Length: 85
Image (tube, rainbow, N blue to C red):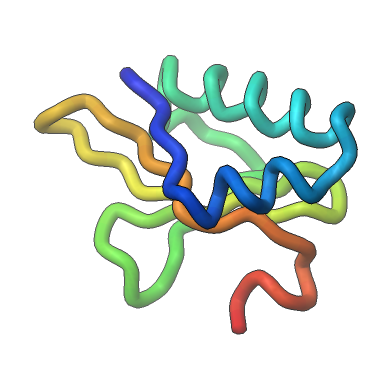
């Protein structure tokens, strides 16, 4: 499955530290291998069809999964307090 990032997600990656950004990118590659695997750090998003939240320490990554075209799209990255606003 291919991982894509929206422009706003790319901007967010540039704003965080290099270590955290690398962790997010590698972690999302792992998620793309099996997007529906059981994971305590993953939860479905309410109001977003096929949307999920993945936790990376104090960061949250919001993404959608399209199984038909095999794309995992990351659309928002941010801190816990501001990500859901």
